[in-house]
Length: 185
Image 1 (cartoon, one colour):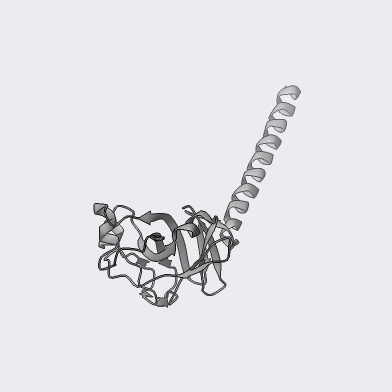
Image 2 (image 1 turned 90 degrees about the vertical axis):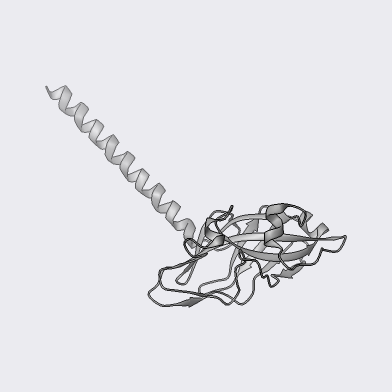
């Protein structure tokens, strides 16, 4: 009987240790939200009450049916240029309307910088837009939200060689920011 008690006590201590270690591991995962540099696509960063998630980045091809909808009204890029779409989800976690930055910037490892360009696409993230309290961009049931990627697009026109100067970083300014994401081109 005494042996069973020690065995149960040992199991209880091991279980408590496992639970404690698991709690520390989960706490460490939560701490990653505080990191604001070198974030990977798919990670969420909080800049004040706004949460940003860069879901996907890719070159856009005017001759592709899907991509043509992202490039509405845009001229063909020059021979040494390309369009890049950075697809973002933004959530306002506050009780007040919030405004997203007026511009976004990407930078290559060679120091080349590009500002996002205006877009008339229904998928475009409009810089300077207001996100209503506890709402999202893209809004639920909008074309961008139900579209193939489920996010709003920031559009960039860059030199082709810049796409090879990886990592290419997106900078998002904001309260408690800026934050940078390594884009997967």
